[in-house]
Length: 265
Image 1: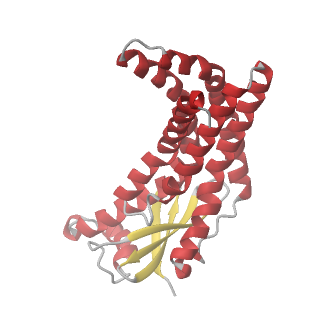
Image 2: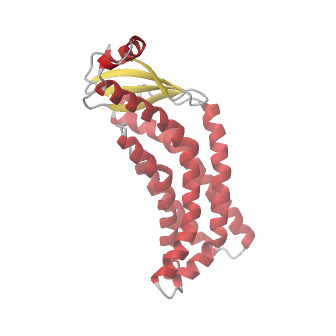
């Protein structure tokens, strides 16, 4: 690689990393907080291809002098990034989980194609818009960084460019990850509630609802991990596997509310 493209490659890699951190980093943090299994897996799988794609796009941009071709390049880059955001959670993650834990991995079925396709289309449009703008200003931003008189000027130019990649990452997170992590959050909060609530303070109706979880006979206050197994076309009915230190249960979350759990046969 020619030396005069090193900066463009580095800035492109940084752009790709920012995209990945926004698309999957915050999601990983939330999943880690709610005891989800493999919370950082999406970020681990997505950050390297995102960085390489960003770096390659940065170098190719500087080699193309035709504005129209640059526009086509960044539309293509936006499409690739958006396809990555749907491939990682719905294809790559289940395959990796099957390798790491075959017994649990075989239970994961993400086949709600209509829901995934609709959200992929929205994500693709938003990603193309963000990265199309980023591609148009990529050369100017790099020139501003190269000839900036101080650190503040360099940082400002970099942040202005990175903001569009962050916007594309946020679009991916809000369209895919958000609805997938809400049921996990709801279930983890419900399990914590059942484990800590004083039954003597509850009425008969609440006690019956509590029995849906206490009947499992597991240590609800002990360690547990959550794995998303299935979801419907609207992400409204979700089945989650809960591993209570070796005891496996399946729980249903309907419209954001933890419904009931049963021991896995």
